[in-house]
Image (cartoon, rainbow, N blue to C red; front, side, top):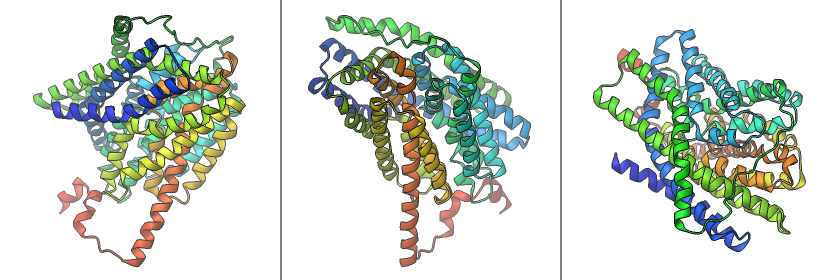
Length: 510
């Protein structure tokens, strides 16, 4: 366990360090800030590193096994009504604990925080229900995406403009370091009981559909709930940080609040774990204790993460965006956004989980390094477009809808497994670093408070869309390479190597 924790913290360090150094260098060369503020940012980065490392360890120990076991158990029941109820409950509860959603709920003006949280969680619940039914009944992912995207576009046209960017961002932030590993494990657990060769392909796509539900639910909220005079309140910037003690006291003062806040978010998923154990008796005493320790790691990691975010990253991101936008170097937002976008992919824990899952189910045919390379290029492009959109005040529809159209069109040419991976991975990039630094940076770069709802929000949605296109292009490229290689030197695949498609039931029959 100790070695696993060290490994995860080192991964978090190697992921967060590039973006931390980039931002620190930016504050020295382009947009100077007080030394005290830089100290707060660096301490916040340290808390993020330890928080993400501890959180990821806890997810591996508790949430991923729980997701896989629930997926297997509920499919074995063969009772569709029960499967629907369990899918909805798991989607709703897991989203409440998602740190990225917690961050967004604090940034959106004019909507009571828990109103937004509950609305999004209901959307995730219905999305996971739909995703599970798709796997069980072998429904094409591309067909469901076309229908859901059509509904989203129609609702976006009817919803007030200020609500639309927030709705699309809500879909992006629910797929972070907690939801993605859990949903992926649950999907593999469900698909493991399928006896056909398409079960591996269908194990992907659950995360992608879980992005759509929150967007639709928040758009519906926008039709019913129209806050008047919603004004964004920027995060508090400390007037003076004179000593290291001042820095420590500022973080220490926020810890009790986050201990209580994270407990409120996590108790539903812990309650589900106890109920599952009570009904199924799946875990012996040793395994049960290990799961409890995993939940403890998850809790501590979330507390450290949220403290580092609230005190260190959100204020600095907003301040830097505002300083650069107000200077004569405003167009530097575009290359800086692209640079941050390229590095931010490596800092997302959900991307690491998805890379490992991709390599596992594809038996190494789809290399994780290639996935990350295409992702980095996609996110860099999306953030460059986002900053240009903020500067020119371009409506989000002009960029988002063409991306949706391209993503849907490519599904007809991309191999099925790549389609699921593309939509899942694009959702995974909108994790902690996106919601904690990039979104506040975009909000700070807006021309004024009246433009924040229109220009600042929507950033997460754009980040999620361009990788969907880039990874489907990767799928087409790899398909052509494999076809060319097969034509030049056909390879006989031994029967033993197709074990991934066999199920437990088939072995029993033999």
